[in-house]
Length: 294
Ligand code: GLU
Image (cartoon, rainbow, N blue to C red; front, top):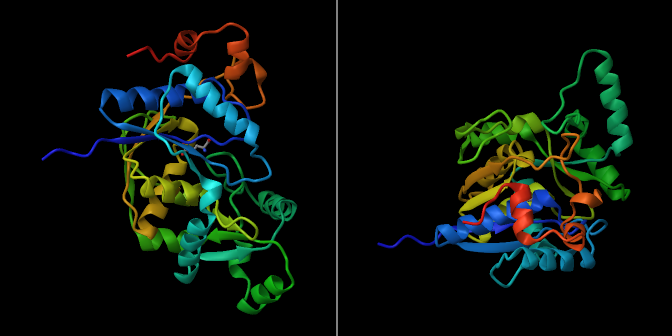
């Protein structure tokens, strides 16, 4: 029996120009797909309407084509599938795993400040303070009153309950985490606390739409930067709660700037289009990111 071909994807957000870090991810996905007789999908992760722009999306197509990368059409644009993500959020809500949290960012920062005074309050793997869970403790009547008043809210996952229902989880890592974690890696979604899965005005979040799309598109291999290594724990949890298959993961080292910092979309010097304008060739980009022509 012949096995179906592996399916890879590159999933950038059109909220800035692609830089060398994206080139490393895209080239790795492209090369691995070709070497394994697999498929490469391109997905535009544009759920954040305030930050995503059509000119950045067009630049993604131009930059990838310039690098010599070919992908399957049609490209999936997340903004065209919001109803699907809403259905999944509704399902988690019905299962009693989501709750509305009404605090603004400033209010959360004040709550965390107060907690920090009595001892260090936990931070998530990205260094942000874990949500203190105040919204989870609101009475049903208070929640209803606030919702009816039109107050904005975020829908947060009751992490303790969700993790208890899903049980012990792990994932298969073919790359490595920041401390060399590889092989079977225990998922630790609790590190993130009650993550936001949707908002009043946006029926989804990165975590929710990424697991739904990867499953729906039949992605078998997820190759992406190490900055998303620990987010994989949340993804495994959501896959389990929503009954979705688990792909194989391969996280690669980030491309760092001269100061040893992660690249940002606002740093011009490492943007692919600026390198191209300055005379760098696609082969030069491959050399810069350490991905040799296979
Ligand atoms: N859209 C995410 C980003 O641009 C990547 C998503 C993923 O690879 O899982 O950082």
